[in-house]
Every structure is written in C-alpha cells, then in structure tokens.
Length: 135
Length: 135
DNA sequence: CAGGATCCAAATAGATACTG
DNA sequence: CAGTATCTATTTGGATCCTG
Image 1 (spheres, rainbow over the protein chains, first blue to last red):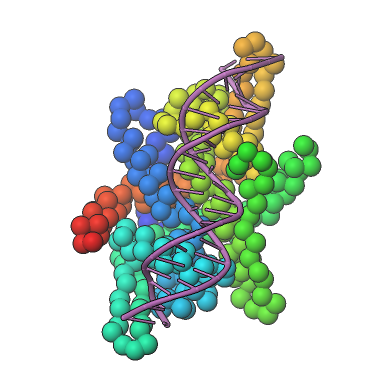
Image 2 (image 1 turned 90 degrees about the horizontal axis):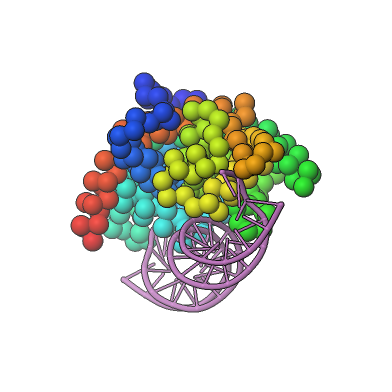
C-alpha cells in the first residue's frame, strides 16, 4: 500500500529457453522462498518495515512466536543480509533490529503478497470448505 | 501437506479490542504463506502460469520434485481453489492441471517475488558467505 | 501415465530451564 | 533484557513398492 514497487519488466521463465539460463533463477527463487517462506520471517520483516525494533518489541508484536523462533528467525535474516542487529552494551541489555537496504527492497514484493492475501483469503477459505465437503 | 489431511492454517489468538484490523490480515497472510511458501507450490504455480500441463510434464520441468510431493502439492493447490485437475478417461490416463482464475491472480505477486529473487540472489549469497566467515 | 500406500529420515517448532 | 542450551513433538520430504 505504501511501499514502492520495483519496476518489473521480466516475464516468467515459464517458456524457458532450453538452455540452463534460468535454472539459477529457479535455485535463487527456491532459496528465497526457503528464507522468507518460513513460518515467521515475513512477519518479522513486515514488522521491521515500520522501523527499528527491539527484541522484546518484536516478540510482543508478533503474536504466538516463541523466544527461540524469534531468535532463530532474526539470526537467519541477519545472515542473509536482510536485517542488522545492533547491541547496546548497557544494563539491562538492549538489542535493536532493523532492515538493511536489501531488506527494504523486499517490502515491495511482500506487500504485493500481503495485498493478495487480504483480497483473496476468503476465496481460499471457501474453496477449501467446498473441497473438503466434496470428499 | 502431510500424509493425513490437515495442513491447517495457523490460528492466531484474536485480541478483542484493536480497531487495527491488522490481525485478520496477519492470519490471512500466515495462511497464504503456509500454502505458497512451501517447498514446491510456487514452482508449480509458476509452471502452470505458462498454461495447462500434464502431471508428467510438470514432473519433468520441476527439477528435483518427487512424484509424491508433486501429487501432494497439486492436491493442496486444488483444495485451495488455485488449480483445476482434469482427468481424461483414456488409456493410458491423462490428467491436466491448470490455474484457476484465482490462481492466475497469484501470478502477479509471485512474479514480483521472482523478480526480487533474480535481482538480489547474489546479494544474499554474498551476505551469507560474509556472515559465515565472520563466525 | 498418474497416482495411492508405507516406511523412514530430516528439518522445524515449542516448552522449559538457565545465564550475563 | 536478550538471549543459549536441551529435549521433545510435530511436520516435512524422499524412497520404494503397488495399481488401474
């Protein structure tokens, strides 16, 4: 809704040239999905899209996430260069997380997906009920 | 997406108050990600974005997918109303899969993600190496 | 050809306890 | 506060065999 959408000139590699040209893209895609397609990453990125947040703020704002999973999710996002982790050597400790520039570029696509979810969630729900009833 | 049926969406405890309406979207988002964020769904949808395909065509075009996973993935996509399954009573059997209208609407967001993956795959790769080296 | 059924290995997630 | 460390439960995914 608010974020900039990256210009998108590229069509799908559906009609792949028979070369292996977009195998790399497939792999990259698979990779990306393994990263942001997990249970919590998108939620975290979305949250950080609103600005820097501390660990406990994230934990409170993401309903249902366990401490462990938040830690792991943040670690992985940091590893992939999507999130920065800043430790302030105070007592009690304070650690702040923020999106990197790379992380910010993800917000566009995520928003697109978010919008889709918002628009078609009920369609899926209904399709599911119909399908289940038919069994 | 298991041997049994469920693949239930994540249940988020809904706060009574709000006014933010954010939680519903969160639930829907969680839902969507559980569907299309799995290991193969996006690949299958992408493939079907190019038009109707038979089971074995899909299997060949999606490197590394097992028969079982393709079956399960297609079943779930069908259940969610994203894909249609058409059986032709011939011998040997022919089964064709295609996107529904709902499924087609997913292609936009998926393309956005795809483009992102294409554009930033190397960045992630490099960030990862750097992070791992720093440990 | 397009799967269904089983079995098993691996990856993920949650709960709990502990720490600087 | 912001984590680690463990242990366990659940979910996945793959291999293999079987069928109309």
